[in-house]
Length: 378
Image (cartoon, rainbow, N blue to C red; front, side, top):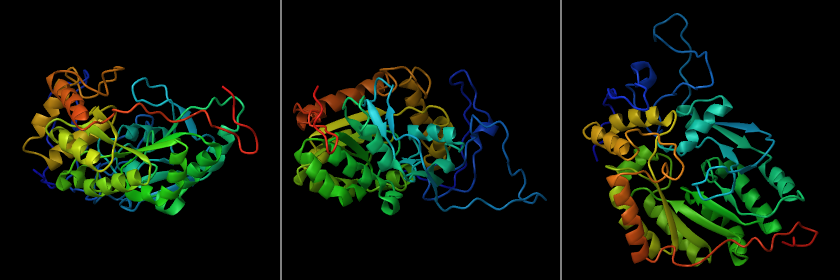
């Protein structure tokens, strides 16, 4: 691993998206923040006026921002969202937390934090919005007479088992509501805390109303520590897959994102070891850097891998028609060109070799019922 955390970022000199990244937009810091993915707060596109510290010795100096995670509790209005995207494989999602302390530098959900008035950078990892009434909102949603039962994805945006779950247990409460209503859910996480809910998951698995995926991007601990600083190790995730699959819960592995020059060569090993530990299905995404993420990722890339950052950046561009932030349906999650095609071919080849996605399986929506009433007739 070429990890030089004190190396200054290298400026981008090429055109991308018909927009040249300026020195002001990069805002490259010289002090590396260990334990965080993003190294600075990129400006919020919805906020016109911002406070900045121009000089440390200035008269109007203010206190340095705290490095501690802040939990911002709120009473939300909704919890279930209809997913309009055609290429993410889910119709509905629910997220008990906004922002994510895991700090994955590539996370597409970073941009959503701007709608809350925060930055997609450090704020996304450090200012976590806690939807305290999540379970009550879900119960109300499921009792609506127009709800035509369909699977709901937990962690469609941010991780439902991120560190905040240790204190708030909102995910467990959501699962208990789903179990009560026989509401099918899918789960995607990078955290071993899912084991704390094995009892509820086992009950749901018997009714075929739950399946779960662990996201594994690399077995290289040096890479994981800087790319996904507060996630569970790959070795521990395999143990989670093993334990839950033995408990009768359908388990899978998500390889996302595959980043050329960093982790795409690990696809075979990830699939093999996941299969050896009981995973029966899999999925993957190819890196794309939309919105503020391209600036945050660029800064991170050149700080951690200065000797081959140029190569990685250009490989990403080659896979998105000369850009890094492809938004085209059907292409953005898979990329295009030789590198993306090679990754797709590996996925197909090794998926077949390790018998992934071989079974015909789906979550059961037929037994949904409102407690105290009868099962819905479809």
